[in-house]
Image 1: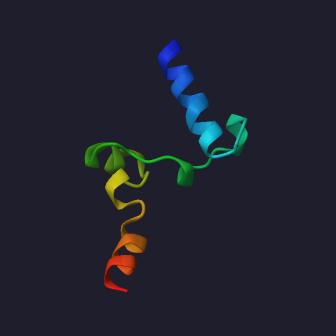
Image 2: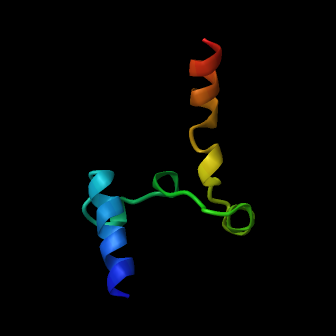
Length: 58
């Protein structure tokens, strides 16, 4: 629990959102495709895929 709690605090600090009420589904990513399908949260490898492709093709 302590590790989970610390990880959540680090994510929140990185997002500059210091309370859970400010975290949205767009701030997090699913680590597996299965988790993405079940939760509806975007898969981590797809989060910035569109922007990366534009940079590579641009």
